Image 1 (cartoon, one colour):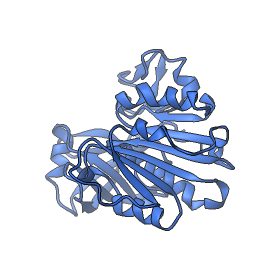
Image 2 (tube, one colour):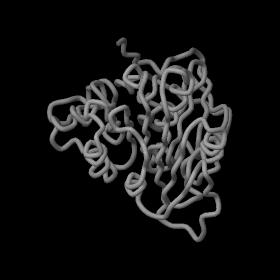
Image 3 (cartoon, one colour):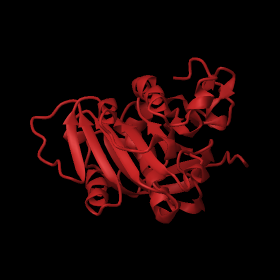
Image 4 (cartoon, helix red, strand yellow):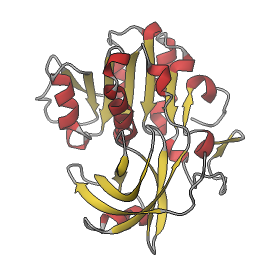
Length: 275
């Protein structure tokens, strides 16, 4: 893969502020780039700095969408910009989800918090070829109902029977939106697996969320019968420069930026300290 060191000029086309401190940014680029689900770019703000961020949409092309949390100096600077402001985008970097592995199988997506963003890009890619995959189930854990990302979109897909959705939240005063198509419980996202009806031997799983999620759910999925070669996780929090130069991403001798960030559980078991 050719590495682009010169950022592509882009402008902020739209900012969706539905979820506090997790805004969805749409950028329009001066030239198209192709970012596959699970891959990431370096988003730069002139005079401030840059940070890695995964695509939240598929396909991309002349636009790039990312759900970005306000979590540091550079992202705080981005939040101070308005629509029309200039930024730079460099990439794509890394290895995304192997879409061919999903063909002909059921799909189980497990998201925690902001981890829904890269899984949204994967979901859109799978829905783009809906006839090639079987049943799609999404388990999505969030802190509270107001923090659920893409809620209208997900519930629309569930209401149409396109996917099945189960939410879990840490806190809620009421759960008014459970229906036959989508339900919500108070608790951890892993608890949604307990009575889930699916066919593990026919299923490919993709997981994205905080490190604490990986520590339990990946092996839980294997114990339920999903082949570890078909359980994928993205090590988003280890993404750094994207080109293996800073070495901050190196885990057990592997460059997460270039050889990942998506790995199968079978691979992660050979990378001690990765999760």
